[in-house]
Image (tube, rainbow, N blue to C red):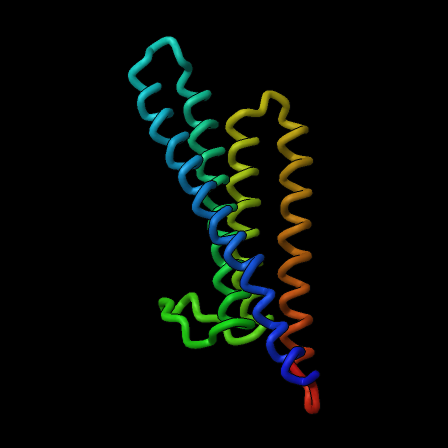
Length: 159
């Protein structure tokens, strides 16, 4: 029974590999959209604002691909093989490491989405509301990171 439970950790390889494959797919899509936007720059009938929004959307797709890649690597490293060779900045030793990396990328995605809305907006009130909402989410994530980091450093707390 114990051996079966020990081996069950390898089930996590399935979502890890799926996440990495999804990441590669989104990277191809995002890169393709950027290339299409660059080609559109030479078409004078396409407004520059539309091209900028398309590029920002493609960057958002690439950031989402990064999230999936980090999730895939993190799950694989945590559950399947801790000795996988990754750059030091991508090494994940605990769920807290994975959480911190994901929060960082999510904040970057929020910034890109807000910038896209800022460029594309016609109503200043909409921009303000989206900015306030985005800021609230970022503050909430920062508070969550701070609160959980303090909690894990308390005597007797486990990670």
